[in-house]
Image (cartoon, rainbow, N blue to C red; front, side):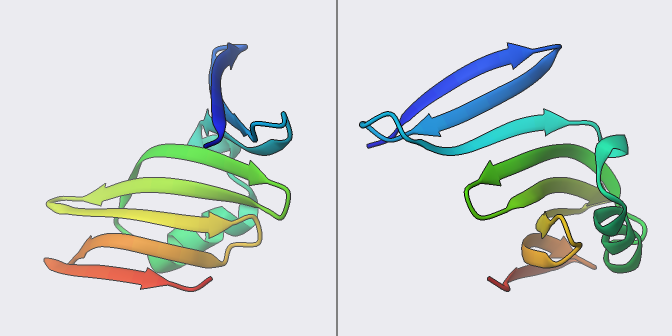
Length: 105
């Protein structure tokens, strides 16, 4: 029941959600992996070694900023949601040929 607005600023795509009353709910934007915080990069190096980052979305809401990162390593594909402190909130994909799905909220 929320409303979505899609817009572009300085070649960056954004999607924002608002309640029917006009209150902001959240915003998602595409970013370069070079713009990830150091803690997120450290988690990628420690937990997803060998994976190549394919895309990064920054998710902002009233409570947090997190990064949804899509990666691949050969036939293995992984999507992880990592907060700005480097904590993995959830991940889903295939590691070493085995499907995995974890939620740490």
